[in-house]
Image 1 (spheres, rainbow, N blue to C red):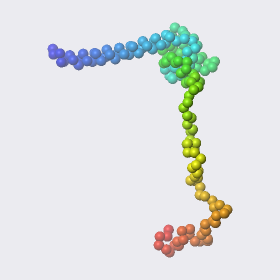
Image 2: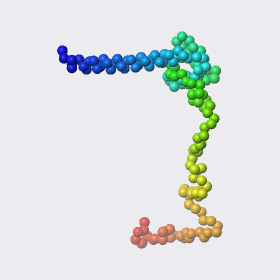
Image 3: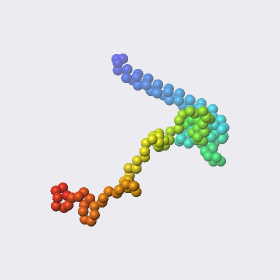
Image 4: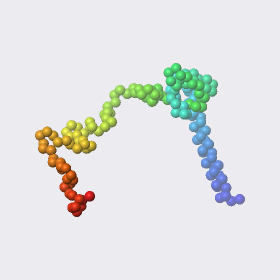
Length: 155
C-alpha cells in the first residue's frame, strides 16, 4: 500500500484529535468556573439572564433573579461568572469610576451649532409682518399666475 493513499486518513484523524482536544479544554474550564461559585456572586445563565447566586447544591444552584424571587437552576446552565464591577454595571447601572472626563454628547445637534445660526422654519410660509406691505393677491376669477384659458401655456 502506498503512503500517499494513507495521507488523507491521517490528516482527518489529526484534525479530529485537535478539535476534540480544544473542546475538552473548554469543557474543563467551564467545570472549573462552576466549581468556583460562591454565594453572592453575580452570574449570567446560558439563556442570558443575570442573577445572584444564593445557594449552591451538588448539581443545582439557587439564583435570585429579582429581589425576593428565587429560581432553581442546574449548574450546567451557568454561562459565566461575573466580577462584581461588571455585574453592577450591567444589572444596576452602577459604575465605580467617578472621574470620567468624557464629554456628554446630547441627543440632538442643537447645542453643537451655537447661537449664531438663525433657526429656520421650513414647514411654514412666513406671514407678512405689520410694517411690511402684503403682496397683492389676485381678485375674483383671475388666476394666480396671470394667465387665462385662451393663452398658450395655460393649464
